[in-house]
Image (cartoon, rainbow, N blue to C red):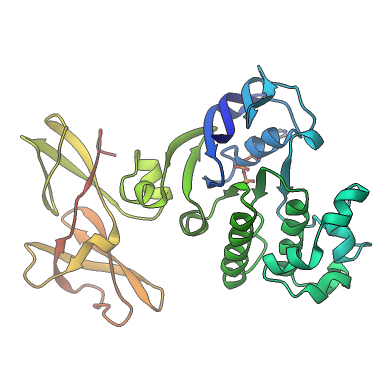
Length: 341
Ligand code: ATP
């Protein structure tokens, strides 16, 4: 059964269409990441599901309960059984960790809430229960905010870029701990993020949003390996789009020929990931190193093939010099888009 069904949800602010007909489903116990660039409508979607604002049209169904019908809220936030964790600053500064976690619970729920267990679930030392929020690191504060949301035993946890204020290494560790805790409680989660690594590494399902619409939904590998549009291809990772022509099931481009199925003859855009492109002395395609981005463990070469740029990932200690002539080959299948871009 699905925990959440969003159907045709729209919402405008004046002339800005923040949500332009969003359809989205989350299954029981699933962690779904909504991934998209700034301003694409992620927070508006989350806030509408939480009940903080109405829509203009569309439905939100939580479990079997319609909570928003024809854009109008039918069930108040506190009765929706959803947890909400904002970017930062969710904790009450004048209450200690334990009081933050149990805030708003009735007496019976408070008795049942095992604060130590919740803290441990989030990878936190139970002795933190008596500390004030200002005595915690940013990552610990966010974990406590998640513990507080989970104490209410929500069927769905809404996470609004909860790790974005943390530095990179802390972000990864916190994200992993939070998803582990969510899974342990059996809740489903909707994680809003603009960070592709976060979405791909933490979620079971990734929904990519652009300009108020969900443009692709799929498992992380599916979205990465088979992007539905040039936008998804370039937003979820990097790569090169090259003009190609399909003739009789083969797409011919400057980096070689690729079999394609189910595509009519004609001009298309051919997309390959940098890790598919290999420096290969036996390769049939000649290229010139125009520049590179060095990341330590690896580097991304910007190669010129004729008038086109092709990205190529290499080990950090195997970066050829700028201007060097190299030969390349391409591994695996190429993705084809309807039109060259
Ligand atoms: P970010 O990643 O930057 O938080 P987002 O994807 O969450 O962006 P939203 O915050 O949902 O995007 O905003 C979507 C669009 O709606 C933006 O153009 C934004 O300026 C606009 N918008 C959001 N809330 C309001 C509001 N209360 N009043 C007016 N415009 C708004």
